Image 1 (cartoon, helix red, strand yellow):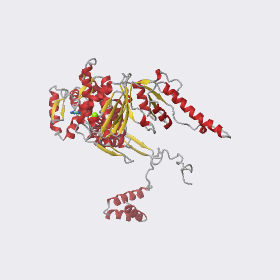
Image 2 (image 1 turned 120 degrees about the vertical axis):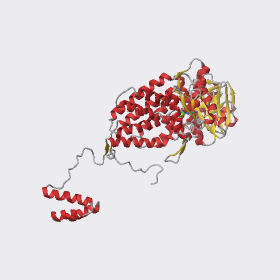
Image 3 (image 1 turned 120 degrees about the horizontal axis):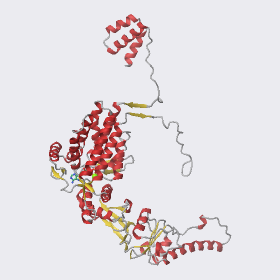
Image 4 (image 1 turned 90 degrees about the vertical axis):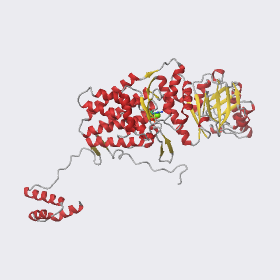
Length: 591
Ligand code: ADP
Ligand code: MG
């Protein structure tokens, strides 16, 4: 192009006739076209100027719009889906993500991966949002929702390319969501909530299905029992933060245990601590928010003294204040003293001499869970330490777990809380175990509140696919094509489950379609035997909530992305802000 412009400029001074001649001779098509234009302009005496574009937005604003914009958004979403699709299912692989600070995370959890991917594409971010909202709402199905949304968008792409108006697509998707949810509710199976044993069985199976795609899949029976027991400890609101999860490196996974009370790591302690008794039965427990340290009162006030006796009095007063507090605590009969604030060396020794256990700097949430378990209330002064504000439990003891020492309170009268102590090798492994347990705990909580279940392993998706395909034949117009296309998109879950396990997905899907056509509504992928199986009998159960939420989330996200046909990016926003202040000279900075 520069060459072309240069040669045109050379010729501008030439006679029009000559230019026409060049046009004949040149082999460059662009030059020839330009000459042609130039000659025509000269003949009609019209100036050779292009019409200036109408400027609406600030210069530098990037707008892309119309059909290409929708397609490019869909393409971006497909890239995101590709990134997570291989993690789906019991045979899914994990992802190792390294962030900017070099922190590595190994995870199989869709929401965790999506969060860490740090996606900047504005449309693809929608997928992150639905994954996170699925995580917050039901805890599981975070990969499935992204996959579904991606596949629905993919099938809509062909319609967009064929000039179907996005609004028609959006309407079709809304319809699909309504139909699917109605169908799930229709076929979901309910259990008798009153029958505690049956309910526990159901909960365990749902937890096991959630865990079977995680690192701890082989220990899923062990952990699903633990998760159900843990959730059963909570009160009817099932607050998640009342299940404490503590991670202790070392040991094997099976050494993980559930404590029906509170346990937390031994806090920082001073000399004298080792003289304290580490085991009490039915102790009274004082929960404080008081600093039990010798405070230099001269820090708080200015004192003018002119002789040694006066000074001695000040020192004595400081000691008296501390001893007064300690005496009141011991007099209250408390045998275990926990404080959010530090407990100093004098206090530690004082308690040790009087057969009292103490721990300072107890983390806030641990202290709160201790109240939930043992009763009592946090005190900010020692003036009213009566029995009503002191907690109690059957047994308090310090235990060695792995390399750490734990303060453990068991047999708590009001235990509406529990603690899971996780053991395991590498740190990343324990962290992924914790995330997996979180999924299972959320699933159990959801199922307690809403006891409808469906079969997993692609069974419910295949059933919805069949239902939608059948339904689509009853409607006329473009909607028929859209519903049929989404019906096919639903098959992405079983297909991906097969692909991730290395099965021949085409073969399995054909057999699944056949089974569902014959009325076998719970047939899904049998991951163990490369086959199809009735997953309801195989106890691959999932709460209906997970699927309802996933379908709602996926169709909403797809509708949102389809209805955006313009992205306006304004790189200049924030340009008027003052530049960040230069680091000033202050404490610790070199002059
Ligand atoms: P998500 O983040 O969506 O929960 P997972 O990796 O946990 O993704 O995979 C969930 C999928 O795996 C669900 O569709 C579930 O039905 C399926 N699944 C779980 N356990 C089994 C199993 N034992 N056999 C077949 N499919 C299973
Ligand atoms: Mg899962």
